[in-house]
Image 1 (cartoon, one colour):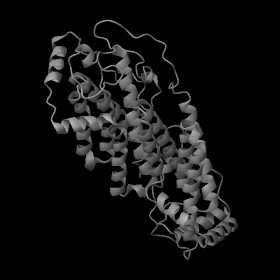
Image 2 (image 1 turned 90 degrees about the horizontal axis):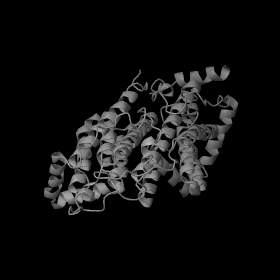
Image 3 (image 1 turned 135 degrees about the vertical axis):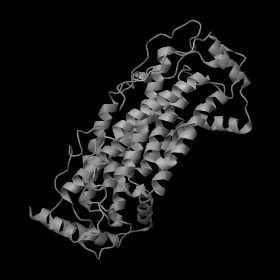
Image 4 (image 1 turned 90 degrees about the vertical axis):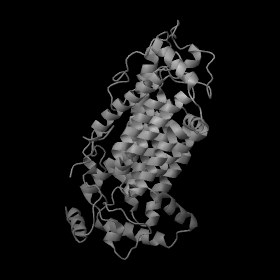
Length: 449
């Protein structure tokens, strides 16, 4: 009780202290029962805190160039920023396809979001002053967060991210753990966290990550296809179709992959389908349209660039200094893209619709057609799903995001690998999934005062 009174007294002496999201600890979580599920024990008492502050002062005089570099690197964005970048680069370097990269990014960002909410629950439960608030003569090397010190949010995000990524990339587990410790330690070097903040944050993040990993192990993604490929006119044909069970993977917001299943595709021998096929033959392919089609075929176009644009928007809107808001952006985007993917793949393998080049072998495509059924179009579904949510999160950029999603879908017609009805169905599917995610987000408590 004396410690609590002491801390409140310190904070009362700081009337200009603009709190960052004091209610974020009550926001709706994805895998936790709530922000308080793993609330750490109270921070050390006043005497121990004074000892930790003395330790920070001692460390300040020993910082070398490497430590300064770590401080600057991890201070470049929100606690989630560099971890999202890490997965972006891994996906680009390995060429991981849309089904797997959508799943991985959702797992990563959900873990960091829930860890951040949990950190905020504890921060405002204990209201531990920052080192520079306790001793104004101790000047931090970076701008301190306007939120209580315990537990440290960079440590919580790092603990969650490194553990989830280690599950996904076990060969990198040691490197990822080292990164997490570096991220958390950079806050000590910068003078904006105590050692006990560091340890509590890492542990909290790891606890959240374990719940995410446990869910990932039961999300059906390891199931093996043992069914048969339908045969006959109008059906897709080939061998080793791409992820025929992705439509059965566990979703985050929609009830299942089939919730928004589109109606059946046009019959392969219908006049409407033949007209679509003729339109593909007649599709003009000016240089810029071809260049766009090749771009949207890459992982930069379909995956990484959406997150690059989110990074930019977060920086430009100064939201990178608001860890809960930034974590929320990444998680909502990723959940929308993942659920759109599951819904799209469910439709693909419900109908096994024939691809244009299979229906007409004289059709020339810009590049090889992906090895899965035609209807609905994945680029349209995933692009609209993620950009509708981005438009909700960054309304001043809504027109740009939505136009890019339409460009992504149209590029598949330019390439000759999708009928227009595939794209139209994908657009509708993406809109439906995004609306469900936005409805979830509008009730997550983040708008409460």
